[in-house]
Length: 58
Image 1 (cartoon, rainbow, N blue to C red):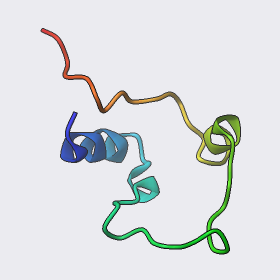
Image 2 (cartoon, rainbow, N blue to C red):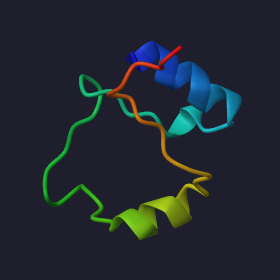
Image 3 (cartoon, one colour):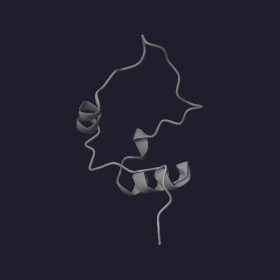
């Protein structure tokens, strides 16, 4: 799945503001927040995961 498709999907779920694009994101170990996957799911009210590496079949 392309970044644009992923962004469109997340926009439909009301989570587009959670997208951080690599060229925009910056920081170091003093400005980052370390979260486990369960913590990340909790803080963003995740309803599931999107596999952006595989193309849809069909």
